[in-house]
Length: 152
Image 1 (spheres, rainbow, N blue to C red):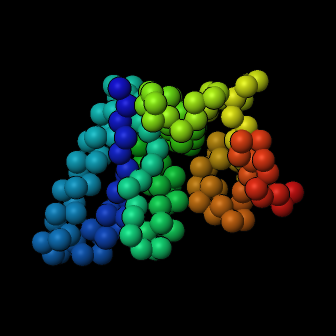
Image 2 (cartoon, rainbow, N blue to C red):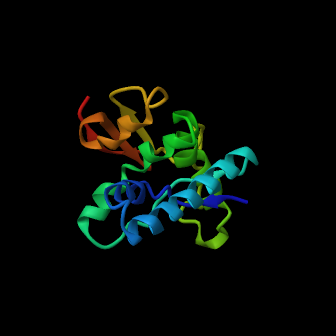
Image 3 (spheres, one colour):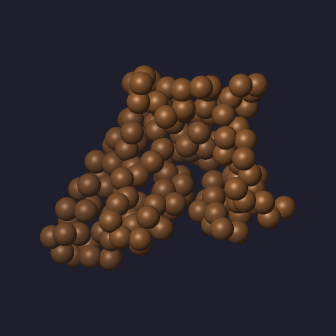
């Protein structure tokens, strides 16, 4: 079992801006529910997947990267990195014939695994938000063994 949810951090920001309105009160209810969801998942050791359902405008996609920092409310940086890597890899493996990576394991560094690596300027174990500024802080991107970005 995996929990696949987003943090709705953008709703928390919106709720603070319109707190005296009906929309602000509804947003606060959503955030209370998300707090309970994430706290309970952590308490029960339920693996949490990483992702968002950002769609629509370019602004929504650009804001999705803030999910790393939003999750710090409930999880530390290492837990969030595991959510984005090994937890998601295990969840994808459970999709059977829909798994887009059937030829080797994901989320691990070992022979035969997909060679997807990032080299980051900064320490995401200390503060995972370093990944939010991906244009400046992700220095090397390798996917399937092919280098797509190298600013080292």
